[in-house]
Length: 568
Image 1: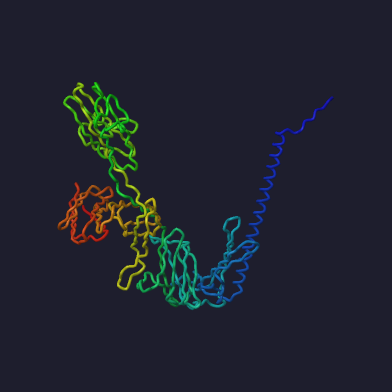
Image 2: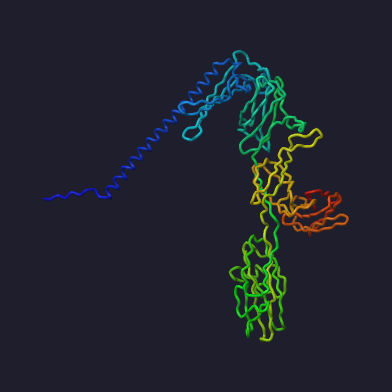
């Protein structure tokens, strides 16, 4: 018997290699995971060892010396140190504070009046492992060697609340006092009740407090300066055996996007029929000698213009035409969409029959549904000697508003941080900036009401909404300004009803001796008057059907002036 032996084929080699590769990768994954777990365990062991070592160091200190450099209580222990062990960098943070034990009452209810019952130390060792932040934490209580003492000072209590007065936990509270010995420079966090409670604070009038939290506004005490002679709030004062309380309000930042535009501009599609370049289709109609008329012996015909598709279209305007229609002849115009389909009467009343008198108002046609329009004509005559003509036709529209870049403006909040010696308020937030190349600027701002000023070089023709801008915590807001070339003195009148609702379509008349001007409030309820004289004797009269007329006298105008007029 003869045996045949077959070697390994290509498929066998590929399959075998793939199996070897799969096994190899699996083993490498296991090895990598093992190495990673070993490194994590090693790093965690290092952090735990450092925390134990630091806590043992603290236990070796006397009770009176148990404190941090710049802390409350003060002592020789650094608040933060760094070290490297086995190629891992560790940060060792030590926080020590007095504790008021509830066993004998808290705060003013403490039975012996001493709130510094014992000390607690917290050691946190932070490090990075496997690309993630990790930490080891130890906490220990330290009792005084004898009876509890006052620690020689008072108690500093910081309350952190939001805009509604609710507690804000986890806020960073930074306390500095350079007038004490030793000086204080301490950062800590508000607890679940939004409170930082620090018994044993040295008596002093110069405790500076700053409260921050990521994504929130900030609050702080302010120093007295030659400008801010009445800071609010000023530095806190700690009195021996007394509790000094400071309350600081912070909340989520709000967003405000300001956009600046130039106003819509009118445009017109016009054909005077010098040629047929602006005609998309004709049947038995020609452009002859500057007029559109029937061809040769034709008794009827049709024509349609090219599609009119303005960029950045705002509104459609009027359909207009010049006609010469002898007795017995007929010329009717229609409006078509961009595909040459006749607009239904539900969109443009009378369009199916056609128009023979002009202008025809097209402003009710939706620009989003019909961004493109065309003019069409039906022409008939009873005989070839009667020649109807279209001398011209036109389609009006407005385009815009167009983003206006690099416009300067200033926003000023109503919150103050004090006042000058003469009582002039010093505002907490003043933001002077410009819109970008796209005519926009987004700002993160503290909850407040912001006035608008210094729109240099422009008058505000319309504002949606009108300033001031009231921003709630964590809210997202947008405001647009429509701007025209600036004049020395201008007035923007915002018309509202008794409930504060904007009133559009109201007639606003502005007058004084030698001057009268009337405008209608925009969709944003504003009426703009430019190029005025600076004066304090303007009169505003407002009327609208369904409302009671209202008159406002003694209105002052100087520079950019905003005026809110409320009428019933």
